[in-house]
Image 1 (cartoon, helix red, strand yellow):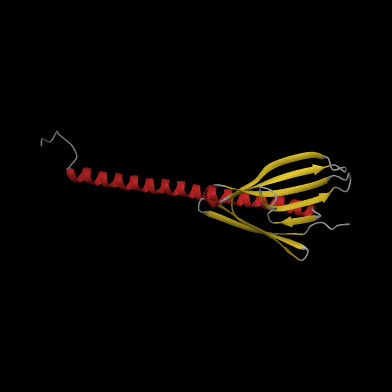
Image 2: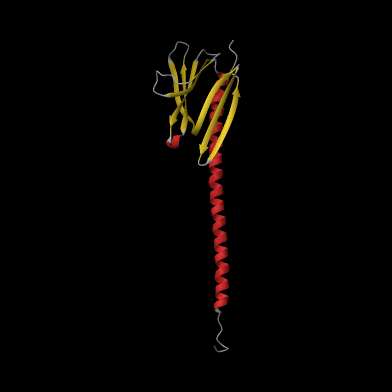
Length: 173
């Protein structure tokens, strides 16, 4: 090689390629960790939000209720989880809340809330159904004295979240 011809030796090129390969491997591992961490975090937030939604609505309606029926009504095609009802003190309207569970993929369930309102003469004046929560793994509701204990577990991806609620219905006067 002439002194005016300059270039890289094979050893120098090998060292540079090895350094670049290490940088690429480290960058790929970092990106993988960020993506997986974000996915786990999203699953956890979804599970938490769904269990909180179910707990909020059932607790709210249980506090309003004058009577509570747990379990499935065999005379209807839906799978009832809990049925609550009360009479409005101000106008005599009768409210009935029916929580039903519906199958989803992967053995999970979604929880729907149907709110029926009848006037003092028994005429239906309102009927709305809304989705309360999805990704429910298990639900249970039981009476323990004057307190109702509600346990809900949700699952999103690999993340699960369980909450227990203790609710005291209003006193019948």
